[in-house]
Length: 591
Image (cartoon, rainbow, N blue to C red):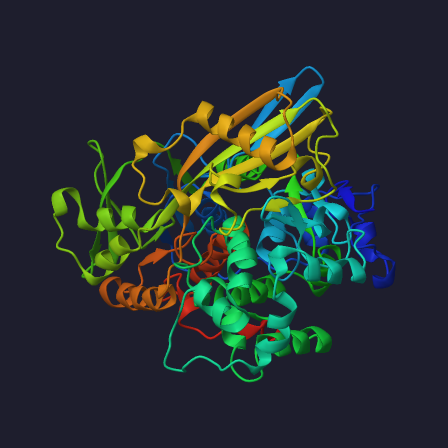
């Protein structure tokens, strides 16, 4: 079965089954244990068994990274955690609506909708879902399902399947498409010729994604395929995005026999992928803190190649974290907080945080910022630039490039509007303007991709518009909700022939939603790490989408890693160790 709703918390009966008898999705319906009892049964070793001196930690930002950081810090009861959020709501861009219509309910997400569910990449996320007792509201799409296997690009005026096994496509179908479709012109030739391409100059420390793929595979691959992928992940421009920061494995693979040979060798020999510091530290912590049986069973149930999503939309994860944090006596959440100044008192080895109003400044042992770099830069300078600029504040202020994305959700009464079973399609930059004047980035077939989320019968679609196409626009030039909906309907009519009127349509403009890792990002983050060590003795730390990854899994991993480091006494970590420590295979977590 490709689609499965988790029947409940992971159960003892499931964990006692022989390994060969546990289906990757299955948990026993009967005898399910609540998480605390289950953890005790698995001999969970708490990180708070050895009590350390009391710590006061401020976490700035109530998005997924900040909430995760606070949640894991709070598990050590000797740590006082204060979470500051500038608005009245938590969650950042992880926003969801449940809309009631005549035939039932429809869930709309305005930020991320799904989570990559395979291990080890999603280990921190899986652990969080288990700790929050959310497996019963977690659903997933299997790797063999048509909805996951079938992904499309739109070029130049029709849908073209991305070459991949599964989804009902035969090997001959894939070869035929690559030979006949204009989108893949020269693709096979570029694959064959790639191993013979000259490697880059070893003195080159980074280059754009477009430059890398043009050199190795040709302009067609860069413009027709890679730009579409970058629209889906970053809503970004491949001429600006850093190859080293966004596709590090391919960047490292260029040396020697070439990318394709190394990719095939790794796949055939099942060599482990290399992972960055944060992920390795999380894997080590979970292996240390939980029983070996837990690690084995979770590994079986969350095999690579699955996509997870939540019954009530992604904001339900935010709601669960918020509820859980309220239960901790050592956690305080301050909403509508305006932080005006952050200073380091070197003599007293503490950070001083000032807020608007008549509140006295508060002292903390550590401050962890998960907000945009420019916001932190302003807070370090203080009102009117009271504190002279430092290397840290200058670097943070320069890390300011993010794109705006309009997310439009539409629900139609007709359940048969989508032409094929698929996840959706992305739109490369090479599509003629007359085929995409709205500057859409892609369309998600949400009825297929997050099936089972809605009780209403119909077709649910999500259209993403803007991104780097809107670079340089004034705020007044950006579309409002009704304009965004009209643009989305126009895209769907032109590309899919959908002219029905939606039962409900909602749109939100996500302002500066996705940070862009431009060429040189890794070197800049390495420098920022050094500045934080030198100027703040690592008492100021950073985490989140502006630094180590724009995905939800990245944010959760960063929060877990930085909290784990503080618990373990690794207080010199800044949150940027991904850029100063070499990547390691996942097996390194076992050492």
